[in-house]
Image (tube, rainbow, N blue to C red; front, side, top):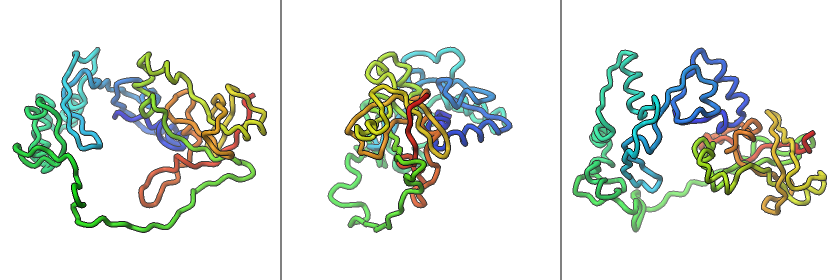
Amino acid sequence: MGENPVLSDPDANHVIDALQSLDFLVVQDIFLTETAQLADVVLPAASFAEKDGTFSNTERRVQLIRKAIEPIGQSKPDYEIICLISTALGYPMCYNSAEEIFEEMTRVTPAYAGISHKRLRQGSLQWPCPTPEHPGTKFLHAGKFSRGLGKFNPVEHIPPDEMPDEEYPFILSTGRRRYHYHTGSMTQRTEALEVFYPTEFLEINCADAEKLGVCDGDMLKVTSRRGTAEVAAKITDRVVPGMVFTSFQYPDVPINRLTNPARCPIAKIPEYKVCAVKVEKAS
């Protein structure tokens, strides 16, 4: 639901194999993403412009959104789809609006108890907002932390699961481009943002490019122990010798087929930033 793990998850070939081995796969999304293309059933969801509701961002700011147009085609707001499925499976769910759902949420979430669509029509609010009279909390920790003093937890350095060797001499690090969001399922369909960054490149240091006989724009084959991707070269000093960088946001450069699914034992985050690869000119 609203996720595209075929592009966003590490060791994506394994992800594809796992999804294809399922007896039945249902994907709910607003576009036919790479993941949705593997589904037995695709449930068309409404976009932000086709539904009412709220967004809460990482600033804890709750903002009201209002439907600008009716849902296109057979698409429906997410809550309507969930209600229909739940009811069909024998657990009746009936909500008449996003506002009704939000009211229920405020009854069971103390930090949202004082927030309502009526108040949000006057402007955004930041949780915690425990009562209808509360103005919201601009700074969560003003003056001091809620526990009093800050707590620092020393940790031991854990080396990456995979480092360069003779066969795979480069470190591949992945990230994002400022013009696109996540796997680009929305931002690469705008006919506007693509103008600023239409295609993806592999950033490679000048010294490494010279050793490999690579020029700007040459197609490169990048290979790890898990997979291969082809991408055009961009020679730069933004990366140090021995490292290459690209984003995971372009379907035609499925770089997460190469990345390592090894996870941090504490945060459980995959090692998107470090995996060993070899780089060569594409034939």
